Image 1 (cartoon, rainbow, N blue to C red):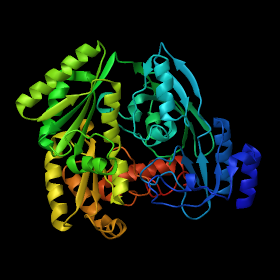
Image 2: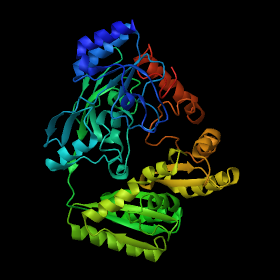
Image 3: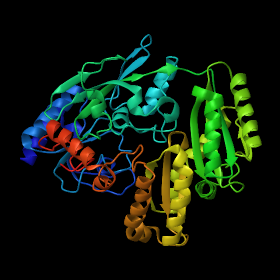
Image 4: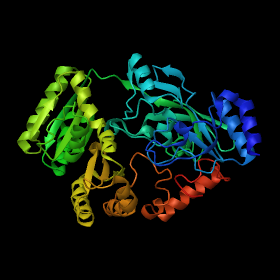
Length: 471
């Protein structure tokens, strides 16, 4: 049966787009290299009709499907298991920008379009598509929507869900639902669009989307500020919101050790105040008047913050090149952490007001229970999302640390998250890494409703099984 399915898929897409055997690591190994799966085949359809045909063939054969975009996910949600029986459905050939509607300020794009490509296409047309991620050079729009990606501008523009007006989906039965309307108001029943966004391919395959565009700002400025503590960072955020309003498009916090790793592993980078302050903040101000107005706003904000005692030193980028350098430092933290060795990653969200207390208490508990532990804490403070990562003690074996301590560290970190009314996944999703832990941190009523939705739309459990919820 499996070989017959492969032959059928080859007849549907052509042999060149049905990959069997050989080196398929790009599709079978996850981004963090934590999972090494084995696919029956990797299929690469070039249109929505071909996606639907592949799904129908797999359904008839009883074969499960793993949808995949750029394979940049961090929770092992887009790679096959080790059984060799699953079909990986890659959407990377579906890259077209089908239509840009300037009057409606929307763009219709296929799921395989790389995020950076869409950003540049919008910019050339005089618009801004504000979703921005470290992986934007390789992640795809379908994956961004399937995981409800966040990034650095959520506090102004929202997550991927907030940027999407409609989707086109191939259902688990191989039918095509065209929900690509560019309407901002459509009150005709359940919002099916939001059901598929964030479902991680477990309810259907997003093949295209209608997305919001925004006017390009007249000027975008970046500032870097040293702050004496996390409570001071939260105070600065409040001042920035009050003074900059909607112009505040980025507010990132970075711990001293996280920045120290960048300075250690990438000595060519200039990391401001890396040894002078326990925390630094990266702010972005997008102004629709002029650069002079934006700079004046920034300088007034930082002067007031220094007077209030929540900023000890600050610098405003003088040009685009300097701004890019500052953002490059921030975006290099995960890479520097990887250079330091295997680590335990957490993508948590908390009420912003409770973040200082969470960090103080959780830092202390981890230090007591695992002496020498090193915390790589950074993230999107503006929307309450921290990447609260844990590194092995200096000189220790990172692999052994991960093997021996990951379960305990996760339990402690997530129990604290629950106590502070937060979430164990802010923007990375659930995937297979968190699927078994989710019922411990989400209410039984919510889990039951999620399972009911999964059974209702995918009764045979063929769409990305073992991710998000256990069917």
